[in-house]
Length: 108
Figure 1: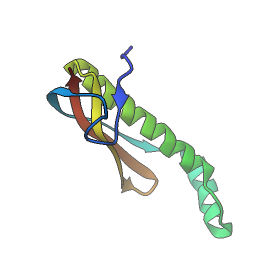
Figure 2: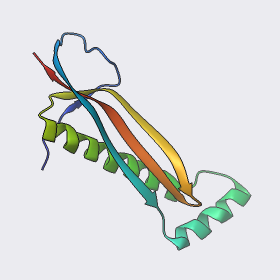
Figure 3: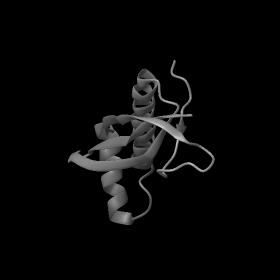
């Protein structure tokens, strides 16, 4: 079980002084849905609307990537991660990669 770290999208946290930048941390996952969900999604593209199966898949992937980033920050002894970002890319037809990254820091 990892401890809860603070995640900040900003680079300077008001009221906090960075004692040490420990370095780059990241977490990633390549996620896909099973073929049945893929077929259902293809019908949705005909009629329009949200493809909830893919929305759920991406939400789960973001959570996994973030947890992996936090695990890496925890292993470095960080107090927080600043400059937190998420990035996605398509790997193949129905698979997407999510990368969570930032800078692990210790506060004074």
